[in-house]
Image (cartoon, rainbow, N blue to C red; front, side, top):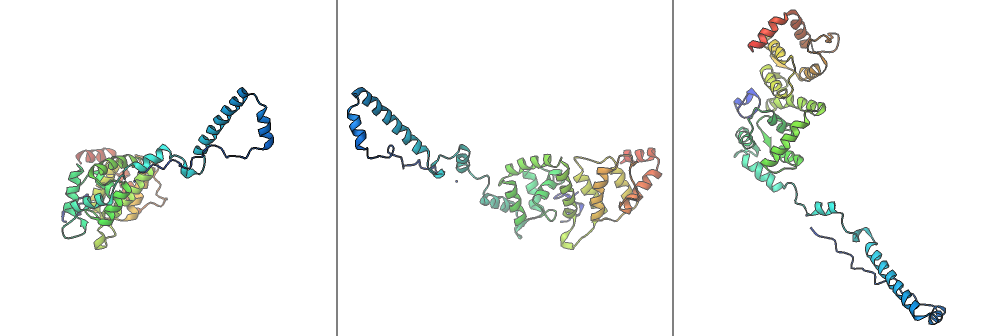
Length: 296
């Protein structure tokens, strides 16, 4: 594996509280009393008049209080979670992302190249050949090993909602748990093949040695039981390259075929390379396979 990335090939290279409504109702609406009411009021004993007056005032205060609480939604106090959201600081800023990118970018190109990738890995306390470096490349949708374009780096940080090394470390730990699930891992696996290709040279098939390196890496947390046997077969058969179809189907093989290959059916649409691998496996005594795996 290279020093700056996973493939052997790269050895060469806002807070404002809403104003409480000042439109406070000054009591209930005033109504012109009728003559009949005034005349009747003159005959009411004073103690009852005081009681009614007191009840009236209490009712007006209540109406005023309800008036303050009512009205349009805009005059209502914000919910606590909304206030918290508005008052909190952004999780990241483009300026901080730009500063981070500038720290690692190449002096002669507007992208992070091999040396900058190594420095980034060092600050993340990662070896360039670690599984989390592959996770970083996957989440940043990097198109080529040992290179982060400005767009890839900015988009990746924004998707992660981070703008610092500490933030990247935290998110990578979360992503590592994410790929324990089948579908995210499948997406990572499919990405890995294209990541390994030399896009600038128009490469369409992975050299076998590089494919083996990438298989070792992508399966580093969940290794198929027959992976070493597969590697031995490829090397002994002097297979020169691995096509994308073979790469993708190999994951399907690991998910569906038992360790002893008893449910492998040649009549299914498996790549011919798999048929040869299984046939050779059954031709060779199990003891010989075990001894060879022990030697490796």
